[in-house]
Image 1: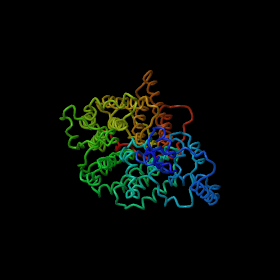
Image 2 (image 1 turned 90 degrees about the vertical axis):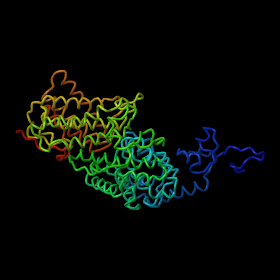
Image 3 (image 1 turned 135 degrees about the horizontal axis):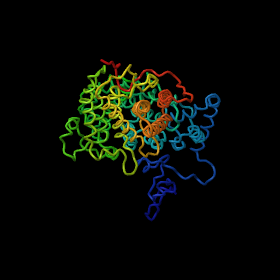
Image 4 (image 1 turned 30 degrees about the vertical axis):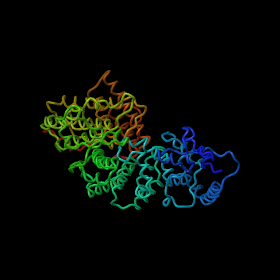
Length: 571
């Protein structure tokens, strides 16, 4: 009797082919392979107990023959390139349920576990492989992305909503390039290395979608981050430029865009708002990291609504968005009128860009008061208007609010950069080694407010240290905090050399150790961050006059300041 057929007395019988999840919950299961209807609907991994009967069914026999044929065709490739079959399966999205849990630091062990899986590359090209919705929900590289990276820059659809979108066959071709880039970033966090095959596969997916499709803004934006922090700087710049041009051409900065593109889907409308604002934020991050004032989108008028809170985005309970006009008038709003964490990060970027634009291109003595009266009022305005609910970066359960973490670091590194040239925390020429540091000026202007500027720098450094010292299990943040943190570390090194002594010196040295340890954790994933650690170590040996062998820096870093500063001249 068919296990799905009701008994003669009218009582339904539970399918003997029920999946393990349905069995454990005592729910009816239709027994569909490879993924039952209930698991498909909720986006869960669907597994069945192995048959206790001997032999293989027809499907299993056909699969085994296919594996044998594929093995015969790929033996020669495996002998000369052991990584190829692994990355090939990753590109195809086949057999990913066999991949070990992501997040381990042992990349080789992780990949060894994948080799022993039941996946097969078959004989088809990975570029032609379409992924089923069920296998997508079980894809550990996608899970790795959402677990390890999504909260840093949450502009893509929430994972469950992305799975639901992919159920629509008419959307699958359009979503493939985005899924390919998600997999690449997920692989970087899982294997702690780059994959040329996944990169090539993603780029091939790009060519299958219209170059003017809005989803390409998301794809290129995310791709640029991975490229940049793997030191593919030129290609990262190209991807970011293309994403920016397309977003501007599509008028993504206008309110009408998100409403039109999102149709009746409130989550998609919010997703498109977040895409524009993430482009806005990363545009500033790139400018700061590479030391230019060439903001491409900061000065563009935006009428698109501000993002909602993360829990609202994840749940789909999207409120009416607040506007940038609401933000600009926040000091007059009632106390219960709060903005989301994302909105406060956007505000921090706006304040930073405005403060930097107010700073003189060539700092002179008389500019000292200008920085205090203008730039400080902008930055302090952001800090002082934070409501109580936004002053705590860590929740009661120990979770760090990543967006507020970035916003606070950004505000304080801006203060450090603007005040240090006027303080007695002098620059050492060896700071030129750092790919994050500003070009050391020939001399610091001696002003009457030199101590005020020094205190401003040290207070911002202390605020950064408090953020780094949060009791999180590991330093797990966007790689863009690398240069924000490094700038504070260089100022602290200068304080050790010119200002601090005794107990204060000991405290500062321990803070430097902690900072380097934090950056090392970022460097385990992103090579550019690892290079920055070596640069700081080299600088510290010179600044502190340590006698041990100075660690080498693999290549001479270019003069790439965090924030723009022309040479200071004393008049």
